[in-house]
Length: 349
Image (cartoon, rainbow, N blue to C red; front, side, top):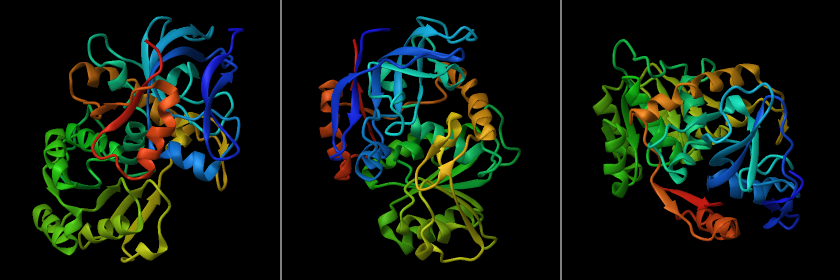
């Protein structure tokens, strides 16, 4: 495509702007699609504020229609409704907040006709992939993954059940036959219960909430996902685990001050390693063939889980104004005002 596209591009002064930008070139194993809807994540504003790579395209989560496929691609096909995830704020040729997006075909999944709107499908991006990697990757928690079910129900703890990652984690664990204990603010208790949580407490109750979780789970928890991963949530989660200790997957780096138990292992997971492309943050992350293979294998079963209604999207808050409105949405999220919902923007009709 010779004509430029509109894209939301990171600027040197830690802002973003809608600019003309080259349409990404399509490789033999890639697809190019016209973006219809994109979803917002905390990583978006953090990449603007703290990473700040001028000229890169922001945004991770997308839904759209395939308009071009590489010569090695059998599926998805031109015209298919697809959704997925790319690493925003890092590369000049890859980011979701744009009229066109390129991705390896294996990293997009076809949305079954008549199931999800583009706005809903766009929520199955960064948060969904993170939940999959954290729970089921053999080098993370290594739990039994749907459509299989665990032989005997066991308790898994998810801190931050109403977060985007938490919502998907609860559903995935429930589908695999696990019993789920979680935290959420009281106004989100009904939401997480509807997604499959067996026990939910208000984290703000502190020691009382921890005691309630231990009582409800028989003090048997050995595996947990902290979907917030700040100091207080890391410490809270460590205290929820039973006397045998165990493992906690974090979305941010472990906080040394949260290490309240020697028998609890904190492990950071970073979903960008599943994208099959080298990148650098504080350190260089080489391509991980194992992470890429794990994610592409799981994505192949996602259409069936969506088709049957086994997986639900995050509740959508449609933010009007398209790409030009993203700065306002980012500020709203910076201020901590998002709770139990996903901000989504419409890019095209």
